[in-house]
Image: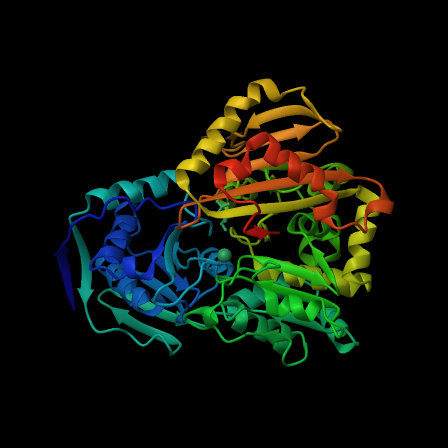
Length: 543
Ligand code: G1P
Ligand code: ZN
């Protein structure tokens, strides 16, 4: 077979974000765009000759042709073996699990996570290293550098291979093995959770509804929940992955997972509801008429961890991103373990997990995970909840209320202002930063500012420093308001305002979070001039 060196011209301005390179499909379809980026990835790596590369994606439009291209470039660059999910499909956590299990050199994941798909939608590509986690900044920086100066790439001139059949084929000297997308992942879940208890639960009158949102978790959820755990057929809704996610926005929150929300807040709601996103790393958990905030979910999983076989010996520590509520900190205190506060983005958990400083980690953005992989893991969180429900035999709501009674409630909400003019959003942040010097000690009604912080982080393992990770205002009663600009949006800027208030009083635990946070919501605008800078009188998404 023929290895060709193709002359190319670099595209500038394609800096990959924290979750890899995400662009419109039409951008990726430009001649040599994908090829350049893939070659730039390989140009940034050393000593991978003869090694294994894992390839898979969330099934969105362009997943299949991109997989073929990557295989041919990987073969031309000297990889020894490629493990590819059947039909090019691997959820992000499954890809992470497979990289670890087969000691691959790394993996390429094709996904734009929860962003809409289809010919007019988004596509994405990211590189994960041998621990199964996203490449650290020094690797993504090197990829970026190479993508700016690239002048040629190598590719094997060969017809596409059949990705629909399991088995082995060859591209030049590289063996390609098409593997079952679900099997390895399902096996890992079986090791972590008490499947026989969960089976018994599904054998009782317990019902659940899982919304796969026409994204990658459909086949995973059907196999694990319906086949292995005996949940009723039909438990998984929107279970067939579609290239455009059925026109939906595959983000599991109260706004976008509306099919599920309608069911769970309806008269015939099952006891448990859950959803996952485009690439299967996010999760949302619901009880009957009841929403569990991701921050609470992390805390509850931590408090109940020993009920699951995979965590029966307890947790080494917990980690949460800075804007995630402090609910997990209360559990860590009680367990006498550390709770690490990291910047937003899953990659910051990698070192803590590798060094066994933390076992569970989570973000307020519907991401929860553990040391079993190096990505957040949607279905894992759902199975963890099922394991807890199976052992405790209580409703989701009762479990959450008992948790609040014991640890207090961290009332929490995030307000997003999407598609804001970038210049105005930057001005808001800039202005906020300048007010910090005279905010400290200031009193606003019942709230007295205790600290103002332009959040920075020193990694406890490699001591690398990350600055400007969000503006945090802390009040004397433990409340916090945090302002951050999104690093993943593709149009304009997205301002995220995170609001948190600690409420130890059980009598107030039934109150709606927006009502409970009303004072802080007003205060956020008063301090930062949100309406003024964004020109919006309300957020586009509230979670
Ligand atoms: C968002 C979430 C963040 C998550 C990231 C990738 O990033 O807020 O927690 O790690 O997506 O899924 P943001 O757009 O806020 O930068
Ligand atoms: Zn995702």
